[in-house]
Image 1 (cartoon, rainbow, N blue to C red):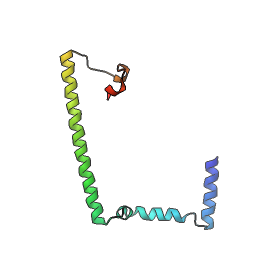
Image 2: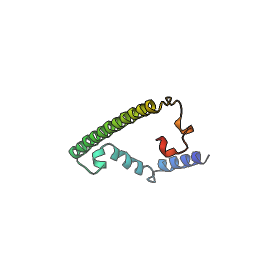
Image 3: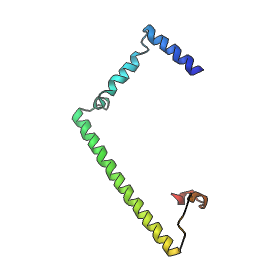
Length: 101
């Protein structure tokens, strides 16, 4: 109910022209050019975006590599100690949350 009242009042104030809508127009104008929003030129922003994408790809590759290594280690440990393959949530069997990551 309070949200409805607030919305009605704010819409009425915007319609009267007391400047309630001018802040939203400024925010929308900045969103059209993300380079200007970050304080960079378009070329700098494009270079920044490329760098961010490359870093994300490197992180993803490292994560995939670590995930594969962990899976391999789990398989070897299961074979060595003849453990059954875990099904379901391993948190039910593990008394320490730090070992189940």
